[in-house]
Image (cartoon, rainbow, N blue to C red):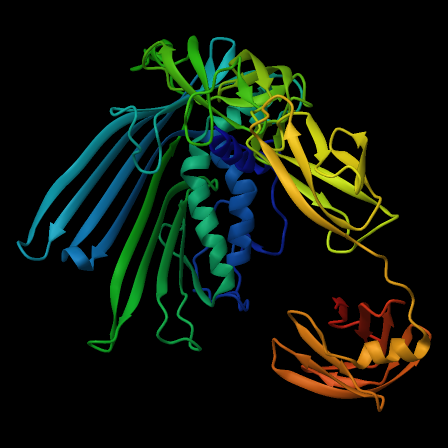
Length: 596
């Protein structure tokens, strides 16, 4: 749904609200004789100016400007019907042949603000082995855009409804016509924009403009031909993407032609792009792929409405069954969705059976504390009720009442503050984590030896552990609703170390290396020292001094960096060392705590 609306939005912004004006820019040429342009982006051949005083571009930038402004407006205002053909040829080396895909769109505009296009698609394969060509696939269809009853509609109906053909599935979308400025992703179209949108511009003319704009990035040849000086203006542009700095890279040869009538109406356009790949076996470039586009357009009054070959009622949704699923596509019970689940949408049993606008998505939750959108996904957050509003690509909405429940507890995780250094006479915080996190179980926290520890509840997931005496014991956390789920933590309560006198503190600092996964630091009694980087296998030497528990370390160079501002702190009991080594730029600081 959103992909097609985004395309409409991109082309609608420059498409509507334009007023046709007569250009007076220096990039246009008048009917009076003039010398060929010497612009830097192209070369221009001599021309015989037409008698009619219309102004037309004389260089590449001017032509692009004209196609994006006056030329577009003229085309939209005067187009009656257009035939747009596209053909791609791909050399399939692994199949020793060539695949050709050709599509044709024949647009007709009608009174009443709509267009109807007959669509055709054909895939062929030519075998180099048998030197025969076989038609592998053909399809026919219709493309409609414009008024429908009091609203507007776009429909692409292929003969195979549920098969992607030429990157386009059969689809149908409804739009409400309004007077205010619109946002197409909300299925709204301003009434004044509808006429412009019923031109084939978006599906024919626009493709040539985008390809022409790419010529600005390369050195191109620009020519305004003398085809019929009394009536027509014909442009011929060629360029190549071959890069002399990368002579063996694939490149494209591009050719575009535009034919305007004496009033600036684009009657014909063509685009040929051929990709070449270097073959190292024969040491030359060979053709890899080729793409051709052609357009022929006739201007004139809009046709009178005709009986349409399709019945929209057969494809517009009237009702459908919504199914919520998890990320694996398994159906969810709307009365029993577990918190933490991602919610996706599927549909079934559409009415009518051939309805095409059946892609629904969640657009609103009445209670975002229970269900809310997290980035691109809708997620059940916690137990409670919410009403979900779902909408399809035509703005058709449905609602679902959803009950979210807490998932059953599967595991308990517990963490204890300073678990490896518990001292008698001190309190520590015990934290409990539920797995899954959205479960709501409550817990009982006990200890095997109450003479060593007392437990005080702070909240459902936090407790204070009061260490009373030295010894070993076990803390047990048990689910109240499911006692078989429990977690135990064995702890040792030690006597709190006492501060060391200065001389013993220095001895403790130098008694053994301080080691971590990343570094090894050695302090020596002669006030020298060293540090080793275990990752880069580098080491450096330094000198040090100590004042109380504060240590100052000299500059050193380690693993490509200078460390010039270096301090460390040893705990009063001599068991913990905290270091902070850096420089004035604070580049790659070493900040770690080492423990005996």
